[in-house]
Image (tube, rainbow, N blue to C red):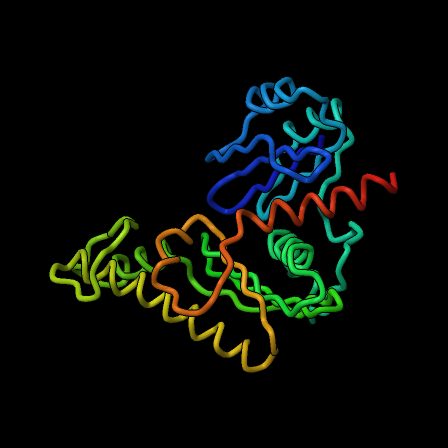
Length: 245
């Protein structure tokens, strides 16, 4: 069994993979704690041998030290070996989540041009070519950032919480903001896919992230809803690096 932990800007996610690379346990919290990990390590029918922790923020050293005493731990840094080639001009600035997203996308769609789009804290797109070269992509404000910006930078617009919509035309201030942000992001994603498809034939598009369910029905281009390419990518990185230790 392998344990994968992704500490993001907003949420912290955990997944346990079996030997068939299937998720057998999954957890998403505002903050993972040692008691939560104790429960996870005691749950599976087979022991967890290795773990990887990826963080886009400050590491929780207490949690990491606790894990190191119990499993073979890989801290995902820029020194880790990767199953893809980084062609990014400034690799030292790349977030670990984007690298893992690219690794997962290439593993899920090998030998294809693949664009993996994540709708989370930010709207992020990562492009990988068929030979496993990661070239970069795009970063734009996420859904909650857009709602917050509308409220913060205007005098009277309210802060709206994300929720499903069923209309094209907003007939209240709240529904106008909701349709503006959600349809605007869907149109932005459609335009991005159209551009990349023109540049790279036979493009595969993966779509994931916490806000993806709110956007999925409004995207016109063909996409594949991916459960979590970041966690899958971290698993691939873990297996590559743990086998060499």
